[in-house]
Length: 316
Image (cartoon, rainbow, N blue to C red):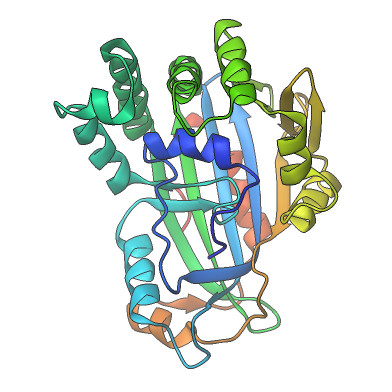
């Protein structure tokens, strides 16, 4: 899997506090050539449905099968509710780690360790519980594409989106305030974070089928993370080709996916920097079936356009 980079370092560190992006940096992990994410927000039901398609799944450590670490990761995905949003370019949702985070927030030393006031810890706990209660990840089939490469899909359902976002934004402001007291934070960033938090910004918003993320950045950090020479330049270029927007103004990065009037938004981004090898096929076949053929595009459209009456009947 793609290792943690600088592109979303600040945003990722917020999520790591909540264990949304608690990625284990293993010596070897499952990787995939590219990922397609299709989503639709149902305003009437206040539900966001996301269909994840991972294309060209393989282990990055050796060419002759999966390592022990890669086998463990495969098993954790198959047995638990764990999904990846463009590897860790954005974040990973891991339900088990989320539960652990809630337990950690209740510990007596949480306030000192996280440098957060009791009210901020309570807001973080409320947010995490809402996520646990309203996010469901279901594994779909593995399949082979026309080139014989291993692929797989997942279905993600997020209910009560309005409540989750209403709880997330104050937690993000709390995080910025805490980060401003961190000795490792530069003087320039301390002032920027406090200014942003005091403005009562809504960092994550949803309007129709448009998702918007805003986050404070100093110009030089934005250029390093998102400029033409950024490590993730290929992902950023692909994101823009899919209609995504990324801009900088008033000391903030703004990332926009989709348009309010779109019925479905689809993003396809490259993930791995290594070439595909068929070293995961045997391990997957030992654990589950592999379909061929499978129309992932049709399955995505069918899932994200489900009505409330069909919500409990996803196609396997």
